[in-house]
Image (tube, rainbow, N blue to C red; front, side):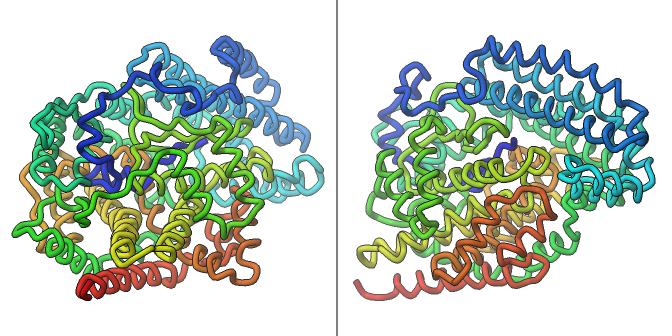
Length: 628
């Protein structure tokens, strides 16, 4: 029941973007109201609730069900039956609470200006807090038990056996679980602790309006995030510059509020880490999935030791564009003189299905059901949530938010988000509720594996030299966005958390200076960062999910290995990948990936990704140097 914002949208949020609608098309179209969009391009939320009245009834049912926890409080150690029934009650209410949250969140993202859905989302969030508080005694009571007795209960009770791994992991985390009263206090503080993220969302999605710039014909173009993406991707440098100045200038007006909300979020992370007796926020974040800290630090170190290929790409981009100075608004500008092909939605569907054919009939049959079954909200509308994500509940089919603009990058986004959705669908079919979620460490593997398979298909089927050059550029940019950029973000996130851990303060100036320094280091001396182009660190929503973005890089590295195995039809590779897709959190993330054929505790996956990137840059340079 997680939202996933694709890596392309993250890059857009920071400084540039890899997806685009042509500026001329952007200029010609006003952003539509939702009522103007055909129903076949909207998601159908009836798989969650048939209507808002049913949502309200379910809300009241969960509220009424909370008192049932009282019969088990203080009594879990008495019998296996008490443990079993308390856990089943928690799962049952959580399933319904998940439906409530997803439905309210999806309705709100249809139009973030709608106060009714703001209220529904707030109600769902408050209910989660109440549910968490009501059930907060469970973990402390289980951990207060003798571990041998607890595991004996799990071994002797047939229904409780399904919770064995969860209970084993709970015992592992014993040192960081607080007393009953302390856990209840933290649970009750949930809405307050979530405030920084909600404040950022309201500023970013509801309050900010960018105004207009002139298009290539001198006509006014209303700037939105999606159109900003389109313009930065386009060939008109004057428009890119104007859009960048307006976009960053708009955020500049909100920088103090954005800095305050991010500072509060980092301090919240540190408060929770310290409360649970972790040495720092990184250790607290990784411990939940039992990920060695060395995996994170080795990733950052490996990227820092191999920035030369990225610097080479910066210099090559500058050369291809033929500019004396490469600015941040040039980082995603089209490198092709020809206008990029635009894909109608129906073309995008067909292309993705063809590209993902190595995944087999079983996979593609369910994939088609998703395309035709009301899973996807396709087009941008007034007030709609930005970017793209996959979301859903345990009992519903997945849902995908897109702001489709016809570009190849958004075709890739479709493959990406459907990768998430297929992973969620298959896992929910195979795993009980308690294991239906995915570790954030593995959450991006299925999505980026789809992107890699699609890109390999497109390059292999390029019709001529120019198309191959274009596709190589796109693959390079995909690795930049999903690997190098995410490591860059992770390094920034580490810096701001470590500053708070040292007892030092955060400020607008610190955020900007730190982001600028890391940004410059990664992209190298050929990039010039303008005076207002260092605000990216304060407008990335994923920073409100502690140490989230590094997982894009590790997931992408794992996906490169898996996609190679699948495309090369390595014996047993597809079957192993299917097992991965059907597995949730019934084992530790590193072990789940090992079973799929990738060991992320070794340097091989990251090294292979860096090597691939360097080879693609070299291959493109060679093609560009060849005579037509």
